[in-house]
Structures are given as C-alpha cells and as structure tokens.
Image (cartoon, rainbow, N blue to C red):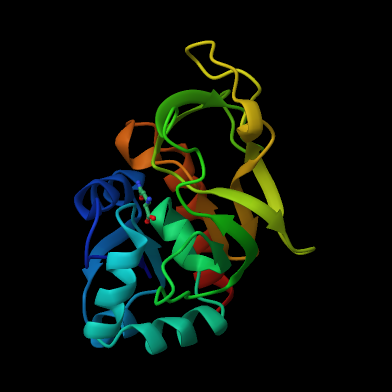
Length: 212
Ligand code: GLN
C-alpha cells in the first residue's frame, strides 16, 4: 500500500510541501482541509505560515480536536516553522488565544530570532541526514527553548551564520527535533529544493505504515 501523506491546507506554503512530498516518490501527497480528509491520511505535514492564523482556522474547520486525537494516537507528523509551533506542547510569545496541537514535548519561542536576523539562511549539520549540512531558510522562525527527555535534537543554530554574522543568543538553540513519529524544523526545507528532510519524514511514515 502506498502511504498517503496529508498536507494541512488551511494557510501557508502548502503547495511547496505537496511538491516536496510528491518528489519523495513512493508516497501520495494530499491536501487536508476537512476532518474526513484527515481520517483518510497516514501522516500529516503542517506547513510554514502563521501559527496564530492556522490555530484559528483549525477551530473554524473543526479540525483541532480530530487532529489532536490523531497525534495522541501516534500519527506521524512533520511541522516546519509555524507547524513546529503548533506541534509544541508549549509556546512562549504566542497569542493568548493560540491553540497548541501538542505531541512534541518542547517549549518553543515564537518569532525568537528578533528583528535583526528575523530572516536568514545558513548551513546546518543535521544528525542522521547523509550528504552534509542542510541549507536552512529561517523566516520569522521560532527556536526551541527546552526539550523533554524523549526528544532528540537533530540540529542547532551554529555560532556563525552563512553571512558570517554572530548568531549571539541564538547560537546552540535547537531548530530541528524529533520525538518518535513527530519531526519538526524551525526552518523551511520545502523552499530550497533539498528534499532530505522530507525524505527522512517519508521514511518515518513508511516505517509506521509497515508496522500498523
Ligand atoms: N512567525 C510565524 C508564526 O508565528 C511562523 C513563521 C513561518 O512559518 N515562517 O507562526
């Protein structure tokens, strides 16, 4: 059976994630807007965009509770940027009415990089990915402030960014994490054409589908 990977299609860079999933081959990528569409997928990608807007739309589209339940039941999920914020158990600097999906035992800080470096690119060593560092695009990104015991840190901000700027307080902050079937990056691999993070997620999904 070909695994089917949904991309939450309420807001954000949905098309880019659908293209990245499709390019992995051997899996099907489908947009998810309705609870019935969520029921039909084996896994879900939550794209970059704006977490407060997505949170509101999850409620409007009556997806919040069904999605929380699927995650609690162990559905594989990958969140990039706003998706990472939504998957985190706790968010700092969020809006008071912002809802968390949960499933990832981390505290994230929204818009953590601040004004001066709020968007930048750098090369990140990424544990478990073959082929050298990953080009990471950060756009008003969060970082991870703290992780629970079951969370594996896969990448952190280097001391110097690609342009040579000192990362300052950002240095060493986790920006890619995994907890069992849940993967999250503070950056946007869907924007670079480097498919290795999506390929890692597709492998996680195929492994989960094979044992279910
Ligand atoms: N700052 C955005 C938020 O709070 C995330 C930005 C992004 O996904 N590129 O959701």
